[in-house]
Image: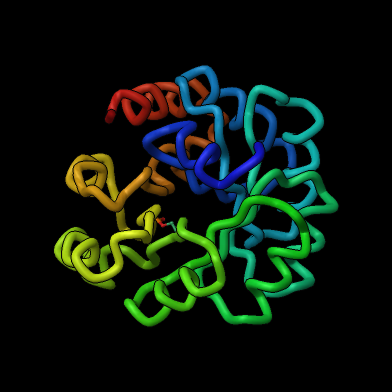
Length: 207
Ligand code: 3PG
């Protein structure tokens, strides 16, 4: 993936995935791809996350694998070394932004305010995550931003659902949304990959 806009154009929904065991990684990525969603944001929230990223990078080439919940320079480097093809952070500081830049990977820095979005634009990046989207003001908030920061492009994530995604996707400054609803915890625990594929197929049809 050469740029973050390439990543954002892969699917209307970037699945935010939490795996509890490394064995879940490859099947869940394949199930998403089978439903037409060839991208995964695998969150660095469980001890197996880096191994899961490595497994998907090695065994599921049809999926663009990213690391989510990147909150430190060390995490950015470890995710890169594990084979992540893009990085996503829930928030952003100058230190974290520099560390993500240093990896050479496309990345989505997290923002929730106009000032944070302006800081990201000042650093030379247009694309950013809007997190947590629903608690931060949802579509009403995001929809009011193009008049003041028309260059900012968002991937809203956090509380977005199959029901609310279309309203976000209709906004001029939204490239895609992120959400965990494609990979429910109980479906992963039960290895119900057909359900994941079904949820992915519905998400892929959103736009
Ligand atoms: C994230 O890491 O982006 C969020 O936890 C995903 O939010 P959701 O679980 O509300 O979709």
